Amino acid sequence: MTLEELGYNNKFEAYRIAQKLTEFETGRVVAEHKERYVVRNEKGEFEAEITGNLRFTAKSREDFPAVGDWVAMSVYDSDSAIIHQILPRFSIVKRQAVGQFGEVQVIATNIDYAFLIQAADRDFSINRLERYLTICYSSRVSPIILLNKIDLIDEQRLNELMGSIQSRIQDVPIMAISNETQSGYETIRKTIEKGKTYCMLGSSGVGKSTLLNNLSGRKIMKTDLISQSTSKGRHITSHRALTVLEGGGILVDNPGMREVGIADTAQGLETTFDKIISLSAGCKFKDCTHTSETGCAVLEAVEKGEIAQSSFENYLRLEREKAHFETTLEERRKKDKEFGKMLKNYKKDVKRNKY
Image 1 (tube, rainbow, N blue to C red):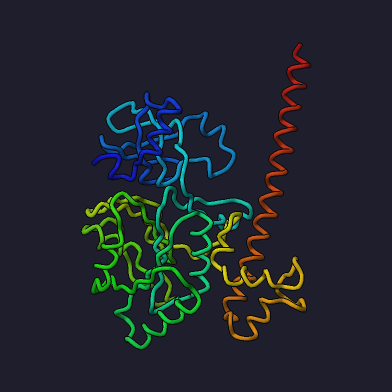
Image 2: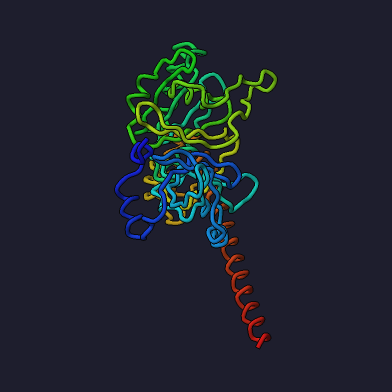
């Protein structure tokens, strides 16, 4: 397998040469297990750890390797390596770390497209789709919506679900599929491009692992049935892994996500709700919150039915979440800066007292 088949391109190679990293091996992180990594290149797979310097200089979790990263590494025996540097990423799919405000969890890096998977028979939520879209747009990743398990509903219900998605989400491809009958799979296979990397985002039980197994033609990930007592999916996938498909595309499977907190400090929310953002330019007040102000163009559009009430409420919810994340992130950065300053002064005092 060549590096190009793993997604390597001229931009990565140009950086490697410019930074004088040619003395190192180049590989892509294909799996992650609690800060231990599996890295693959044209020579095979290697169990890898990061250098102490890389760990020491890391300011946050984003500075550690993640599935999808290209890295410079030293191979010191047949299947072991040390990661020295992470090559610049062109995209980072991330969410707010569960239970840790201001902290980010990296889902995958260097992703071109994201399959947003929802099951047609249960747990269907356009609000969640809009949340995934916000993550994609913030990450500079192109979204593709997959409505799975259509074999469990009738045609009328399928048309209702497709219509409800299309009425709120425009300009995003939507594919109706079945893992059981593999209906719609031909469309997916035609969509997947050689050398491009795709990740799957969705709750537990929507069929991500089965989709990966079917597309790869072999059983890579364990699968399980939906819990009969709770009607919820079980977490079968416990880690992220990257798989190269026979057709040349690259697919990343992720654990199911019951909580999807946005970590959006870019334009993800604005792109997802572009109609609301566009209308807000016509509000009477520049700092309009679109909640109770007179002359609010957005509220007027909601009253007229031009914007769905449910979409508007979801926008306000995500806007509050984004604002809270940004505030918490700024507070955390301020504390880190103060701690760094304190540590620097402490070292100066120790050095002064020593002499």
